[in-house]
Every structure is written in structure tokens, then in C-alpha cells.
Length: 404
Image (cartoon, rainbow, N blue to C red; front, side, top):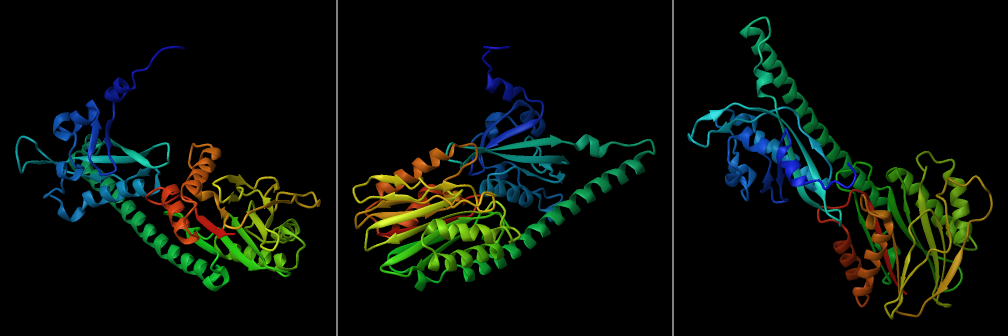
């Protein structure tokens, strides 16, 4: 009914399923009535206690290592900020009244994050479906049929859990290979120079790392360099092709817009370059000017030496392969005083789920303004530390800081 105030605490208490709220330290913050009934423990005996102190591994099935499986699931939620469903678990619970008296339970847990405004996990919703009676159910064939059902269900659940573990291990190995390839394809330190600091942080838990990239290149004619960053949905192979193509185009182009025009035509014939974004800047140190053009990418930030923050957003166009129109891409220029700082980045630095991108841009601007006296290397580290979640971002992040 419109205008009705809902008592969400009462709703939580009355939920029919077993639900507990855990802190990031895996301590009970709250439990509902169904959780109290299902575990046979009072609410007071649970709150403020570490979950695995309350529910240690059963002495009846030490080889199953169920507490390890639950701990791994909870840590995945903390690291990735995403829901994690577990296979059916046998998790025996010791009687609170009789030490050493264990009761057999079969639970189907689901762990979900509660995110704060900054995108960090503040709580974990630990929901448990009690399926012990179902597992114990006996069919028309008598006790033997019921035991077969129980054993089959439990065995298949354990096999699924083991398969998930093997897939995660394979995922981790392939991810390491991708990271090595990414490191080999990005510019060497000698190409970066003393004026700039570069950083790359892979997404937490993602296999397709290396979709983000950066490039710095010396330009012909005077004291000029080109600085670019890009973001794509594919991994290192496509990243390398786009970076190399833009690096070559920048050396012969009249300006950044022309370089992006060439790169856009090239991207149309590269599989995996769909929806790729890039921004490129030409910095002229003789004229103290920056000319820039963007293909669907977040705007670079020019931090003036007086603390003023300028977003370079006056030459923004659609992503590389999203323009059937052959007209030239837009281009704009601005000026700077020596000592200013130019910052290019990818969206992993500023975007958070369920948050407007302007919030992330303001967060970046405030961080840069506070730490504007730092040299490029410590400034890059500080910005990453302040803007990325503690457990890492769910998207790749590339960052370039250039002292002008």
C-alpha cells in the first residue's frame, strides 16, 4: 500500500529461510529467527563470534573439509563482490547442550555481498537452505532406496564442488599466462621516461585481463609526446594490435583525431575490437599545449599547479567501431603551465556498480587535488590506493600520470 512504512528489521527476522549477516571478518553481525531454530543456538551465543569458532569441522567427517569449502566461498564474495552459490554440503553441528554429540545436517548455502556506497563489501548475507529431511527421505522402495537416494545426491554434489575447484585452478593458471603476455606487450620502462608513471591492475577473478592498455610515444617535430589509454572487452591479443596500430598512426598523423580515424578503420577488421574505447593526447612541451580526441572513453584530467581540475571532455565521439559516418573525429586543445599534471585512465578506476559515473569522476578529482604536490610515481600509487576497492576492482585498470 502506498505510503506504508515497512519495518525491514521485522521482515528480516520473519524470513522463512535461515539467514545470517556476517562482517568482512566473518563474524556474526545478526541472525534471523529461522537461523536460530535451524542451528539450535541462541542469538546471543552467535552474535560477535567468528563463524568457524561456532561451527568447527565435524569430527565425524574430517576428510570432507566442509569448513574449508565454506571459508573459500565467503572469501570469494569478499574479493569479487559477487554472489557465490555452493553445492550441497554435509555440515554436522555439535549439540550446544552435549559436547561431542554431533547432529548430521545437509545444507545448501548461498553467500551474497552487501555493498557500501564505495563499492566495498560491508556485509555478507549467508543464506542456508536446510535439506536434511529431504536427503533422509525414504521412497516407496524402503530404507535401501532412501539410502541410495541420499548417497547419490551427496556424491553428485561433492563431484560438482570438486569440478568447480578444478575449474578455478585452471582459471588461475590461464590468468597468469595472460598477465605475462600483457606485461610483454605494454611499453617498456625506457619508453615511459622520467616525466610519467604508468600502472596496470588486472581485474580480480577475471580471465580476460589485458583488455586495458596504455601507450606513450615520441612524436616528430619538437618536444612532443603522444599519450593514450584504451579499454576493450577482449584480452592481450586485441589490446596489442590496437596499441601498435595507434602508436604507428600517431607518429605520422597531423593530430590525435586523425590518428583515431586511422585506428577506427583498422578496428573494423579486427575481431574482438567491438566496443573498444580509446583517448589519445598530443602534448607539446614547446607550446605548453595538449590536443586530444576521445573515442567513447572517460575524459583525461588536467590538474593545474594551482589545484584547479579540468576534464578534457570537449572532443568525445563514439567507440572505435561505432561510427559508420566517415566524417573526421572531433579534436580540442587546451593549455597548461609547467608543473601541471595530466592523468589518463580506464573506467575500472572510477566506475562502481549502481553508482553514477560522475561520482567516480569527482572522487578522482578530489584525490588528485589533495595530492597534487606528489611526484608522478607516488601520485599514481596514492590514487590507486584511494580509488580501488581493497580487494581489487572487478574491471581492469590502467593509469598514466604525466608531469608537464
